[in-house]
Image (cartoon, rainbow, N blue to C red):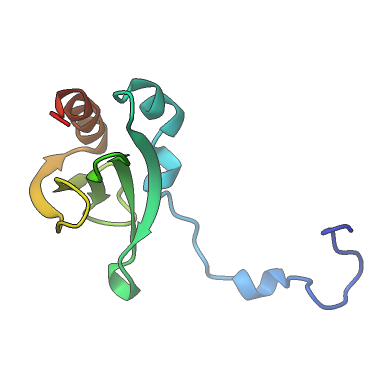
Length: 123
């Protein structure tokens, strides 16, 4: 079975339908997850999640320790400015609510601090 489409039948896209749509760089475009995964402490995972909805839709870098449910979530304050101010939220363990810890000035700085935090985690 091929997923490639041939011809002008159903499933074709019309480039005219994308006129006026502007491509924007988001958090997932600028975070080097391979590097983050290599640097976080053993037992932690790293990924990108889509968070929020509607006008509040965005992406977050999520560092999680599945064994305990501990989670660090880094989200750009503005979707289209991924390298700008980043909101840092933490959940101490599964079953608890996350809380806003601070706002970090700059994505690279926030990711470095979060990676360091994974090595300081008591659980």
